[in-house]
Length: 156
Image 1 (cartoon, rainbow, N blue to C red):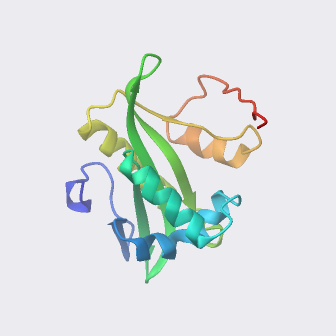
Image 2 (tube, one colour):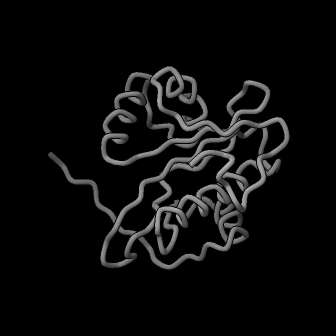
């Protein structure tokens, strides 16, 4: 999808929406992605993840304003019995320095439109229970908490 194909999302003034397809773009997005994913230990680890994930359907978009990356969103279209065909939002982050300027709203609108054109019945994302500011944002976007996800780290 290109920005001109967005029916329900108005691009914020002075911004460009870029589908990340090149390794240099991934490298440029590292510091912002690290705000969301501090476990990313290096640019090389981030690029290696992107390469593997992209081969499995991962799509990454960046929102750029005045040549600075201000927000990122990534997703995969998936299907399972619980959700049917859905758009899974893997990452959604706005730079801490420019929060509350409508960038996250724009990216959520873009993700919803992408879900529609991809034939998805819903959007699904995970967020930590501790992310109360994120929860407020997601509720304002019309997303509802529908489940808890349990996990266990396996040794060895």
